[in-house]
Amino acid sequence: MEQHLSRRLYEAANGRTWFDERQGPINVTVKFDDAGQLLVDLGPGLGELSNTAEMEDLESWLINAADLEVADRFTHRGIVFRFDGKDMYFYHPEERPPPPRRSASLNGVPRIVLSPGHGYYRLYGKKDNYSWVFQRSEQHGVQEDVITMEYAELLQEEMRQRIWGAVPVLARFDASYTHAETKQPWRHISARYYLAWQYPKNPEIWHSLPDDKTQGRERLEDIRSRPFFANHVDAAAAVHLHTNAEPSGTVRGTRVYYHRGSPESKKLADRLLCGMKEIVRSLPRYEDFPMDEEARNDGNYGENRLAAMPSALVELAFHSNKGDAAALLDDDFKKAVVSGLTKGFKLYREGAECEPFMVELGEGYGYTNHIGTVTLSFKGYPRTPVDFHFEEFDCGPLATECINQYGSRYSVSSPMYYPLRCPNRPGPHKYRLTMTDADGVISNAAEGEINCKFVDW
Image 1: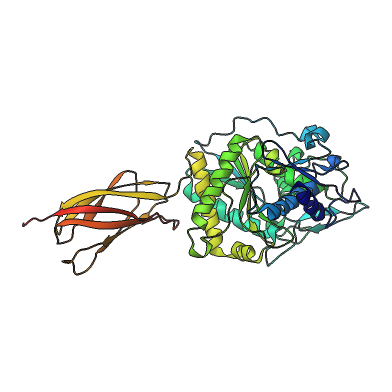
Image 2: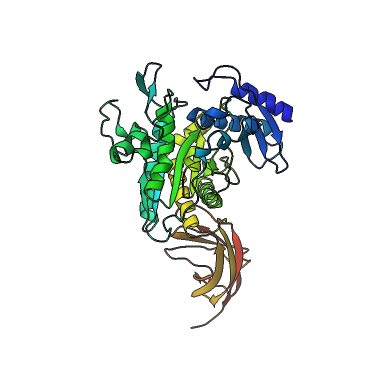
């Protein structure tokens, strides 16, 4: 298997040109270590380029290619890249993550940096002339540089409404004013240039590589500007939004990445993924939408690595896949994604586990033709208001029909009592309860009964 993966990843790596600064084939060797990790060594010569934006693109390309090869065959505990046996910090010790600091309190007025990926940037030529280009090409009607901004704006508004005291801030400018030089809307321009305008006296945020003369230097500065901005404003968390791609067009689904060695980032990433999974899959046409079971620590993404607070990179779906691209453009999918991300952040903020919405229905008591009471309990974190549907079953020979009862509550707790009307027939009455929250998440169907006594008042 190692030889097979080495060959296939070699083909993927050499199917296109990645680096203007280096010509010739890229060597790829794949091995499994004792911890179950997939070690991908790109050989000598690329170590000096291990901190570039192009290397991030190559690593992401190879991660997706590896997934395509190992799908449904075996699992691994992450993909780690090496360069002639050494990690990127051997060549660039300055790229080590900043020491974890005590970030701004999540319980006060937390500032959350929302970073929509990519955007227009200056690509330099060989004689310092340049042109403005998008960082990603359009596929199936999806321009990643543009659509990530749409999701970020929706997420910002959702967080403002649902997370008390939170201050979600964007790393790009959410306005349609025209950028003078490009004649593009500012909302299409990458973070580097917006942050240069907002923080002209802090070039360490947006011009962190003043000695870099490579053609794509401002794309790399754009990547770095996002965590540096989050560090500068003392954000409590950072969430980076992207769409994914791979050459075959067959890989699908949602993935969330965190930086290896950051347990708080893993908690954040896992909650974000879980929230999205629950709400997106509550939509009937997306009930089987592929999503990872847990967040990943593959690769070495600068947006996560350079952040001094919990940070997660969300790959919403694959714009290279026709079905995923259609989902990315669908308003219902967008709404479900931002609701899921908001719920995931709330779970992380409250230190709560992500549990499926499960209800148990206990016994109840009452009098015929009057309101009785049943007890119920649930797990999970439903968003209010919550709708209740009680469906009577096994009604017995004396019943003309089984009775359905409906209700809604703006405040729910577990356990709780719920008022339920007793029919005009004495004895036990069996009910099946389902609960549906404001995000459309439906609980399991739980069975219980209410014992109704006859009374002649």
